Length: 196
Image (cartoon, rainbow, N blue to C red; front, side):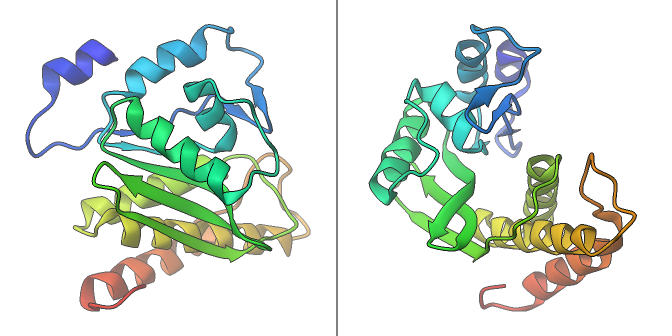
């Protein structure tokens, strides 16, 4: 992947990396202990890097803290930038007490955070869903912060919709019914100058 990114990078291209390899303090069982170091080399090529807390810790060699303080997360964001990526979003982060969302930082030092009330439910695939919706915002000409806000709202709406469905599958979030919400958020963001 590193060679691919180096060979095919273009000035107007975007390399968006979600290092989907871990969660809950643990590397996925199918991956070996050397995988995070190899993934860090891939992440160094990213314009935008989007790990969760566990992935961020593994990429930077930081001991995992399931209840990190703000300084810990700020230091973690800086370590992720030190890998070489231009911008980083830490997903699933506790933004404020009772709020989960995303923390962002870029190489210029510009930072942002966006949180929504923590939901009691947890489903597989929400990180993938966030990354997909965020890329959708970027491809619609929105900046990273606006795209991340939209993605967070879409994921939250999808989790809420899944939670109230008595027939919901145990293996993933039901996002399909929330696609109109995503499209509406994207449309609003393109039309309005203010925050989504």
